[in-house]
Image (cartoon, one colour):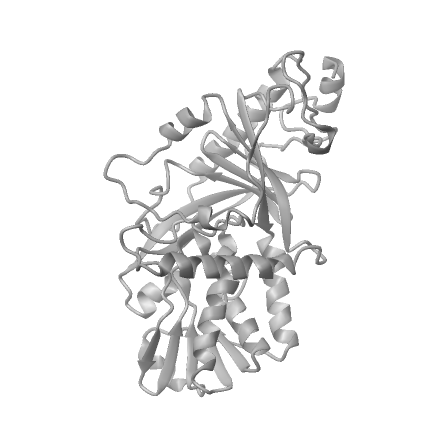
Length: 396
């Protein structure tokens, strides 16, 4: 590719137009034609394109999600919360377990508390099992905390601590993961693309091993469980990209493909599916389990997420703070990038820019939900720097 062709495509850092094609190199053969990098459309990474900054508190439990059954006065309560950073990813599988336990009580009029990822999927699966369902919630999408999630398929993100789970939890996790994944297959190609596959690129100047060492947890840090190897057959392996086969300016680049949730449209799809099947929603805020006595239903699924910490006085829930800067959507951008500890993901409802910090411990036990505008702008400037480097590197 000639330099003047590149400059015609990208006239300034972050300006959209023609995409960036892979550089050619006499030393590095290109990828096979069927694996070639598609045209990379640049992100307009200007701080004045940030249209909002959101904070989400992930509800982490060292022992993993709570899925037990409890009696509260005359109510049977099935818990379905505490999924850390894996709420959307495990929602269908986890809710399937909760629904099975709820239906075992023999009641066909069931209440769900909470209207986030776990509440909506629990309610829909209850309907499919033949139940009449009412959702009781203080907030609905897009106000719920799970609406502020990144939107990536991350089924074991802060799901548990290795030394705190039961012996059978890895197998239970795998069941939830596989069932959720196969349910998401049914949403591919649906109008509005609530779920879709995107290519994602991991970029670094140091070698991947050195980059990983730079972001490793400090000595004595928490050991978060990792189970991805149990489901390696579900997703394609990462692919190292040789120099000259891609347009990025870093020495090392790796590509994989991952499921992405366009949460604004996906949440709306779930709400509509629930209402179309005769579901009801009532606005209510509970302050203690004893207040469930006012419900007519005898069986309740508690899917309150981080809210369960206050409602159920569950001190096992630890908040893990995460912040996102949202850039104005660019329909022509259809990929994700990780670069210098910043995660960039193009969704239909905005371009997610998230500072990942250092390892999984970032944001741990931090319940501050106040957005940090300065940190958001700093992360966006990292994105701008990446595309600035793409423009400046001479083409061979």
